Image (cartoon, rainbow, N blue to C red; front, side, top):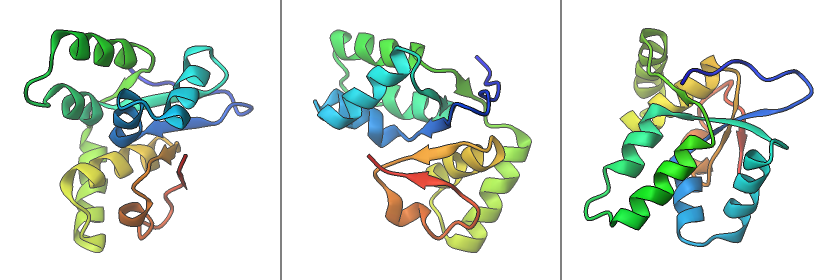
Length: 134
């Protein structure tokens, strides 16, 4: 799936992996936010890196895999393009951001999306990145 910008009247979020993990662990705020996406009240997308991170957890049970697949189906996934990779490399050099966070931040910045995360501490130093936490 690819992502197309939302109309200006609807804010677009790039959802960090930790928000989906919170939902899977029963966090009511994360679940409520995802319900807004499911019902169309909120526009959001994911990095393919989030897809990888969720599905690479060792010892996933079949019901957990199904729940992850259901979550992934709610939102388009954004590819890691050359432009994203180069921007992430700049973030890693300049801010010492780890690889996964740099790629997710670069995806949000390039797509002009607000990064929804519980990990504000690691993303705050990145200039020009819109952040929001639940």
